[in-house]
Length: 405
Ligand code: ADP
Image 1 (tube, protein in one colour):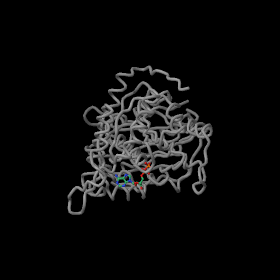
Image 2 (tube, helix red, strand yellow; image 1 turned 180 degrees about the vertical axis):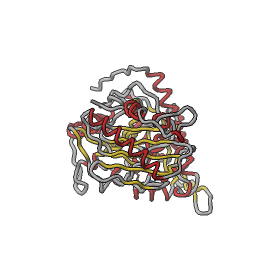
Image 3 (cartoon, helix red, strand yellow; image 1 turned 90 degrees about the horizontal axis):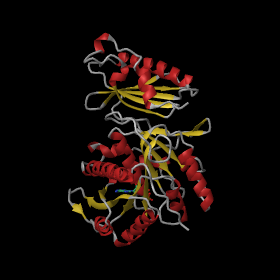
Image 4 (cartoon, protein in one colour; image 1 turned 90 degrees about the vertical axis):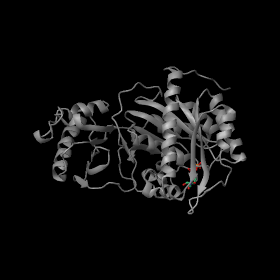
């Protein structure tokens, strides 16, 4: 039996708050639940308990949640593997984290910024129950991120869109389907993590508030990945369908680059809400991006927007340097009548944070080399949300099927 976010909330509704914390007519832990994500064996939650500052009391409350949730999951036939409870203040900053692993004793940390690779549920409102339009059970919107060629920052944009959406309170999954060069093990610092499989289902890694799976954890990282079409398609389908996603608002899918057989077949495999095309500003990059956009359109997949990556560079002198021809991708989007989601500058912090697997750092002024990067990423995320809302309105619940011969 699948345990849903609502089941977790119902479970927490049976835990009364101590009298001193039962204010404003809010009497149970469920009343103080800000965010929850669950994929059966893994659950994370965020609680806002005004007036609670004592860490021991927070730990005791987290332990009560652990007992109740573990019992609920046991009844459902899925032993709890891990629970993370974050206590947040009113603006959403984490003031205490309690982590419980299945085989390790309860641990607590007291941190504002968890280490790369650690779980970091997103701040923001609790997502409302949804209908599914992705074709994957529990997944509301499935969005592919594609590019005409490699090296333009497709994976970087996919990771940051996913983390940015999660930071706004959405339940987000990220699937690394780039079979030729899976980047997520590095970009999310998953190298030392073990891929868990439970009852034949891949358990996504819980990092930076998102659930992530990557083909890179299923193959030898040192070996070249030689895939033939059907094999690649099979692996991609398995990754999408045999992962325990739980309930997701957004599933972001990092596709292989290009418009060849493999990305084309993959794009057709799932019922996508739409696709994002990543491009750098140069003319040659635009030409490839046009082909990628046309591929999605020919498959009947809405292009939700174009992202201009490596748009410009901000030097130490704070001047903006136009290296590749800033605005080229925006003009291309206009020419094709496609939405433009925004530009991301060339940013050394972005490259460094990607290498250390700390995507959350791109959203904090202190670790993002100033405010240009967080602002541009937040703009991308907001524009994507709007485009998804528009696309889902125009698509309704049905999508046309197009056969390519
Ligand atoms: P792709 O998925 O298109 O092959 P990646 O996302 O793997 O490209 O990015 C390639 C390299 O460029 C990575 O090292 C990444 O950190 C870096 N990179 C991507 N976008 C930017 C940017 N805007 N500023 C600085 N480095 C970037």
